[in-house]
Image 1 (cartoon, one colour):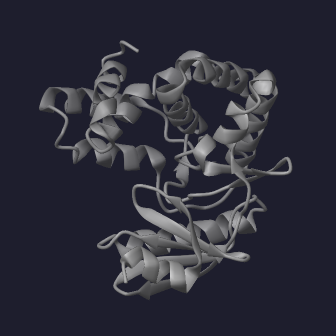
Image 2 (tube, helix red, strand yellow):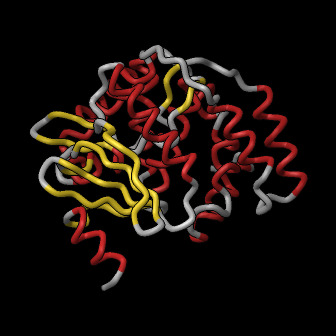
Length: 254
């Protein structure tokens, strides 16, 4: 029996797969099965953060328990159903502005929650720059200096807020994948969303940035200032096809 067959038999059908984990579900329960060797401290962190987010009244899966099954860490949670926001958006481009406004409102609702968190998003990004050996020393030092000049902030930040991590079910939105959640400047969260959306659709990214600034009162330049830090933190850690674009962003040429 393959690993996939084993977990499918135990937890249900495969409903999602990402870089770090696969998600299986049966009825109203989902189980996130992390890749072999994935640190248990990260799994417990994600479970704890989901608990805090649930307590704040946000629409998110409810954590149930952390398990170790066949040598792999697993997180059991309530199941959130629906289509990804990306799928809904692509199928209804006539409502692009309206749907993007929904996306922005949801993100700003998260930013408005006051939760005491142990990790700073700025310093998480700083550590990723410091230990990213894919960066040449000169570029790494320039990005670290830029990061140090940026504000800390204390907003609740999802850390990876984009359409693939939002599910839509009959007009109701649920946010998944809270492993990157931390406290920080709301604009660093917005910069990540802008960059992630822009990798697949620059036109949609510009619409997102316009609508976010209109709703929040933020200045476009203050969001874009974070982009080189975001790009440097991911350089060499996501598929190679994105490396030229990340280099352009780091060098202010995007």
